Length: 117
Image (cartoon, rainbow, N blue to C red; front, side, top):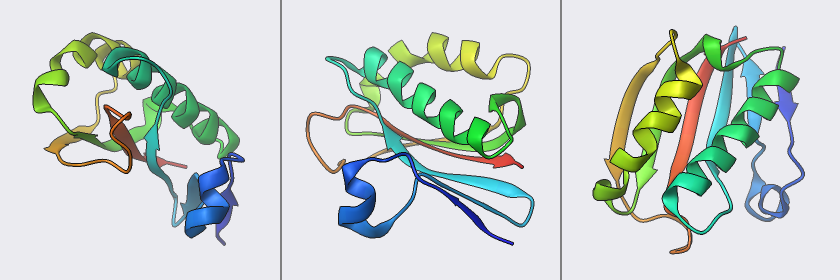
């Protein structure tokens, strides 16, 4: 059984995706950006959106097994470390950080996770 979770973002219908998919015992959360003026505020906002999707899927951040971070400037990753450390706490997932272009230059970080359902 597959469950699709929509957040209501305008981009879901424009691009053809959903915020998360629950399948095979996992929750796959799409790459998520957050609103804000800097990388730190965007990181916090993206995590809130991810938490909402995980909650709707019956999961939470303690069940995240894999996280990928995408940033247009790798130097901006370090200011996010305290936020990420607090979010994942005693349950840190395997992680990857990739420096790359994002869909819009206003975005400073995109976060994608896989969690146990």
